Length: 464
Ligand SMILES: [Zn+2]
Image (cartoon, rainbow, N blue to C red; front, side, top):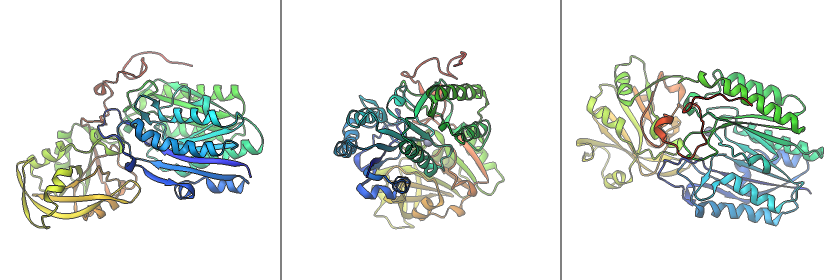
């Protein structure tokens, strides 16, 4: 049976973040087990191919990946590739913004290594996050590229299937597809780019219309993400078609359209400095108000250690029940873990008396338990501290910490925009423009390695 090698290797990097991902930070499966996490096996098998599993290794966004950790997983994927040099296809689900120390794009390096082993007719299909920073060379090594069409992301399955179906189509019809990448020199505040709203809504519809034609296999917009200081950091379009000229033409047309919208992205909720957000939350009449600490967004690689907003609340002594979820502080969790719920303690760091409210657990990215949480009550403020970096993206995270989300009128989380799962609990959203590794203000990031000119840092014209 003809073979298609399958793998996934993902970690979105953040150059300003301090915590490099460790091997243990990756959710890891090898062999058949990887198909529990991927949606492509049936597509390949139903089409008569054998799906050969390599590795699934996916970590929460973090600082850049060290060579040691990168090669730990890269070598395992290459072992499968080396054992199957006769594969007719390769499918990999990447993020697209993995920056490896001394190497650059982790995706590009791996694709180059794979190309050295497989035959020149072997087709390589990949899927990428909408925030992929595509390197100029990527399409020299990947034949089929598909990206998420939703931000926040909810179409991971469809995206994998789009590439897998295109791969099967090309293999069955013995045709070679062409992927063309067009860089678009803009780098916008990630949180202003959401696909349910214009102008992205119409642009995404354009890509779907293109894909419904026979000649275009995939049409993709990649929005880039501004937290990697590297030359490939920018937005781009990638089109895969059976005709080379057509792929290029459509990718350029999409690029011009994307560029034309550059001034039309705005925050979809109130975006203010932390102090103003705290004031508005306290004064607001809504049932439940969320504040997102965007500069310390753990889902964008930041540490989640900042106590700036907690301290503002401590100063204000809110009458409303307020929850701060969650702050990374292993020392604090260690120090007070032996205390019983209800015991009084003194939090030196903040100069306040507090009560240990409840012991709990941290629900990880892949819904597994990754550590301990300890919640303290400081007046009406309940502050959840976690021994590891956490992301409160859904009610389940609060449940595991043994904290009842519904009890609070103000909730602070370390995110940019609220995840879809939290939106139903928010009657109002305040986007705090805080400092940190995931600060959304491009000018404050001081990027030195990106290619200039870059909108909105520079004024210039762009047309392809
Ligand atoms: Zn993303």
